[in-house]
Amino acid sequence: MTLSTQIVRPAALENFRGTEAILVVDDEKLVLSFARSVLKHCGYKVYEFDDPNTALRERAKLKFDLVLTDVVMPGISGPELVKEIHASNPEIPCIFMSGFDAQEIAGKGVTDVCGYLRKPFTPETLVRRVRNTLEGHSHG
Image 1: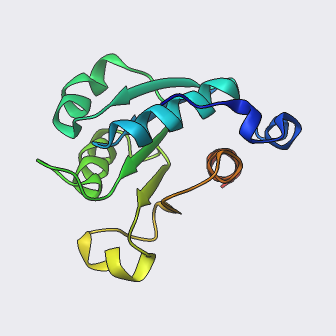
Image 2: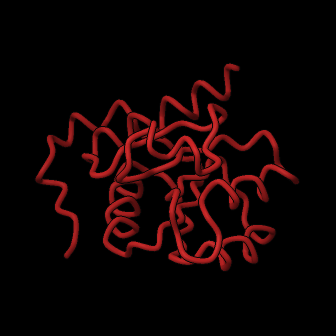
């Protein structure tokens, strides 16, 4: 399945364009593909991984401005991934994605440090959250 940008009004995404690099980690390949397509359509550079352990090994080779990660994944969780990244780059903003609501994932190591995006999400919701997180971080 591929993303068709015709499912959204292209003008709806224009206000959320950017050139930053985003590290996207999700073990669900459909979610990963969807996020990559939407973000690339809006001008972002995307590094994608369907395995958090691979993302951790490769992170030193990459320069990215934001982490967008699932919460529950095999191996290590999204919060554990972010904790490892923040150990060497504490300034990197992050957004957790999950099919669980925020209260359900509160006990999984998710903190207020990172944003939250409930699955499923629309292209506009995704890019709005990414843009607002990046702008909030750069002004904060």
